[in-house]
Image 1 (spheres, helix red, strand yellow):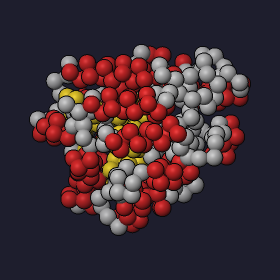
Image 2: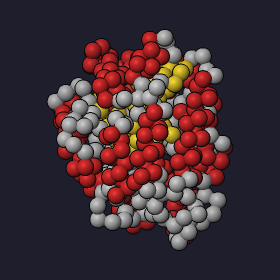
Image 3: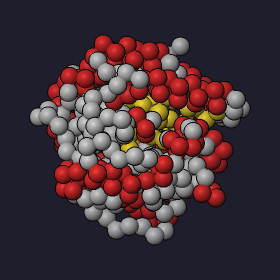
Length: 378
């Protein structure tokens, strides 16, 4: 069985204008025609890679691929790229309602599906898996959506923790006054990204970012450091106490791309007992490697990430799979384009590492972390 640490299940439930990258750019981003041009390029990238060009993350596909649980990422593209605000504008309070609405949409959809159920705490997740249903767990990508003030962020984290929120990715694609982010547009070289989308301030986290970290620690919601630049990573490590675990839910190991993790970051996540989810996005996963043309070559790419994490941490306990499917990552690694293709990956990992280690990578490491840290909700 596989637990996908980062999957965009809600994406196919959202209104078409939110799902379709071709509609992302309906007007110039205030203050820069160049940013509008960049987003227009982004809008031409397709997203879905499932059967017939459909979604990659659905319950039937997860059942087919032996995916027993998905940490389901809530994300509102129109809020992050708020065309009514200048680039780098701080968060607005109304973004919180977008998350509430999307969370409710997911819950209603799952409640009507006999093959899946919402899991709001570790016990419910274990029960869903034991019953042969796909457990869906709420997560958030982008702390810009948590509120406009430290008080509002604290209230939002508490509210969503009570609804079962497991983790929040503090940074994302663009700077929004919470945490500095690493370049994460595959079509744009890192140096060019830094010019077009500069980070602001001299600290990795703003006071809002620090408030989010404190609130998450209080309510036992995991901090996800994916998308952070090195400055934000170091700042986050300093703000948190030295023992609190954190995760990098969908990422690879760095050779050249700043998006990916350095050995020092991998080592620190491992020291804290966190997990790192190997991404299936071809661009990030092949950092320093050849692009695969076959499924077997894709397995080699995934195993290169696994082997490096094992070497750096000295353990099999910090590795997971975080696909980022339906998260605008096309092309995915060959043969891993949707959740229905995860079982062959599981079989290949068993053949390579043995059943015990493969089971840790595919599911047990994530489940163990959730059981010992995630408080969950009622």
